[in-house]
Every structure is written in structure tokens, then in C-alpha cells.
Amino acid sequence: MIARMLFRMILIGLLLNGAKPSFGRVYVVPVEDVAGFFARMPDDATVVSFSAAPVYRCSFDIVLPDRQLLVIDGSGAKLILGPNSNGFTRRIKDQQDAMRRISSRYVIKDFAAIEGGLKGIDLAASLGSTISNLRLQGQSQVSLDLRFCLMCRIEMVLVTTPRAKGIQLRQGDWPGASATNSQCNSTILAQCRVYCASATTRAFSVHNSGGVRLEDCISEGHAPEHDLFLSAVMGGSESRTANNPVVKSFMLSNFHVEHRTRIASIHVNMPAKAVVDMSNVYWNSPQSTPVIDYLGGQLNISDIGWFAKGMRIRTRVAAPRMDVVRSHDLLSFGTETDRSSTQAGVLILENTLPGHSSLVLDHVRVSRSSR
Image (cartoon, rainbow, N blue to C red; front, side, top):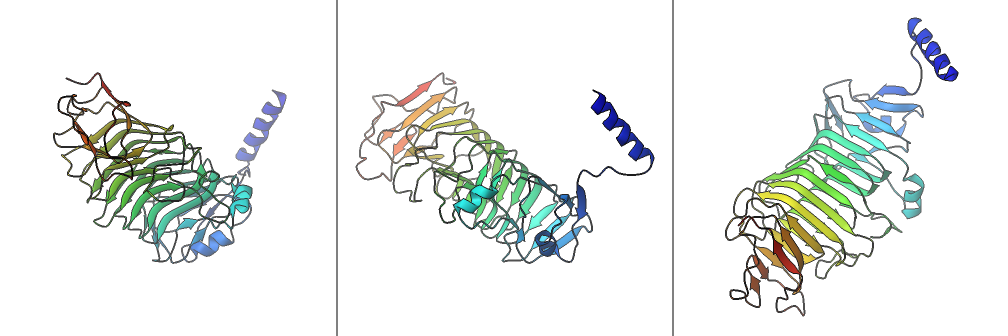
């Protein structure tokens, strides 16, 4: 108590004398040399602000230095990247280097827009970072790419017209990284929107990462290949079912889809013992491609309030594991009298993996429909 009172007295004295207590330093990023400033950032910098001009330009990678915590405040500015820039990025040598640097944490926030570049934000080897309240526009590879980013939070991020992928979470791709030692586990995406361009492939994608939550998000604009691509395949080939032994769950809630897709809306290829909870998903118009393309995982679908006639779930394996509860009565697996070897209500066995020729419905159930 005495120490706390003494600290307050010293602080009041400093303020009364016009002095500011020094707990860290705020630096303003110079307009003329963004990448160079980050390369030579002073050791005492805790906050850097893009407040010198309404528009910044940078043709190079903006390499983030290691910091226990660094706040990058866009201050409402627009950052325009050169076509070969990876935006805010981390250069990781190998998995040993990643493990040494994993404690670095960043807050990247409040940009009016980050435009152009190969990527807008390319964050890697980080624990507990936050990316919030910004727009990423017109990137050619991935607008927001996270590799080996644990317990991160992505919120209020607006991705506009990505030329390939919107927001992607995945394992590390450097030497020594694998699908089991460098995931983006326990990361949350909340209130994010991807407005797809005509060439967009995946609005959201999650690879080999467990405990990820995607909530209150929107996919709209032109038709992408997928709204959400969820996979835990080690090796990257979707020609077989997921085999990652450490990925156990994924949660999707209040997902709003405002367009059609070119291949399927939601791709699910998770290990057999992984739980995929999918609730309150809304497709605002009938879909000509499958709303779900299923290869594996325990898929729990709930609270689907609207489901149009003709919409379908495709399974590429003979014995899917699906549990539907509290959903529209058209989301049904039919009755024994109207089922065939390849179709049960909205569920269709199609484009099958080798050896999967006839539906087995032992692990498929519908309960408490809206009928």
C-alpha cells in the first residue's frame, strides 16, 4: 500500500511539472521510408503510428522486429503496397528459429486500408497477436496469411476483392515445420467480411489447426471456389481423408453467405475424431453447388433456419458422420422408402474416393427439425 501511494505521488509530481513518465516510446512512421524504419526500429519502441500523412506507400516487405509487444497503429491512414510486397511480414529461417521467436506479439489496427501487394499481412511465429479494424484490398496471393500463430484474434477485418485467397490460417512452411508442430491453434476470427472478386478462390481457409473459431463473419461479392475451406490433411492432397492426429475441433457460428460458389460453399475434410460444430449458417439464395462438401470429421449442424429446396450436401465417403438438430425441415436425410445407394434426402454420394460406392447411414441423424 505504501509503495503504491509513493508511486502515485511521484507520478502526480511528474505531471504537475510538465514531465511525462517514460514507460515506452511512441514513434511516428516516416512517410518516405516505411520499410527502412521498421528495419532500424529503436529498441525502446512500444507503439508506432502511421500518423504523419493520410497515405503511405511502400514497395518492399515491412519486416516486423521481434518484440514482446509492439502496437502498430494505422491512425486511419491508407497504406499502398508495391506489387511484390508481402506487407507486414516475418522472415522465419526454420522451425528452431520460429520456436525461439514465438513469444513476439503484435497489435496491428486501425488502417483505413492496406492496398495491393502479394499479401497485406503475413504474420508468422506469434503467440497472442491481434489484428483489428482494418481493410485489406486487392492483394494478389493472400490478403491475410497466418502461419504458426497461436491464440491470435482477428476481428473487424474487411477483405475486399482478393485476387486469390482472403483470410488464411495454416501451419508453417519453413524447414522443420510440419502439420503437427506449427499450427494456428485456438485462433478466433470474429466479425470479418470477405468481398470476393471474380478470381477469388477461397474467402476463408483453415489448414491443420485445432480449436479455431470463426464467428459472425460474411462471405459475399462474386462467386469464389469456396466460402470456407477447412482441412487437416497432412501433405496437402484432398484426394484422401484428413490424417492429422492433433487437430480435434473447429467451430463455425453465424456465418452469412451472400452469393453462389464455383465448387462448394463449405469444404470439410477433418480427422474422424475431430468435432466440427456448424451453427446458424445462412445461404441467402438457392445454391447450384453443394453447400457442404464432406470428406471427414464428426459434423454437427444446428440452427439452420432457412434451407432451400434443391440445396444439397455432398459426401465423398460412404459412411459420413453427421448430426443435424433444430434446423429447417428440408435439411433432411429422407426416409428408408425414398433413399437410394447414392442419395438420402439432401445427402448425395458423389465424386467419391476409391472404395466408397454405397451410402451407409449408421452415423447420420436428424432430430428436432422445424417441421
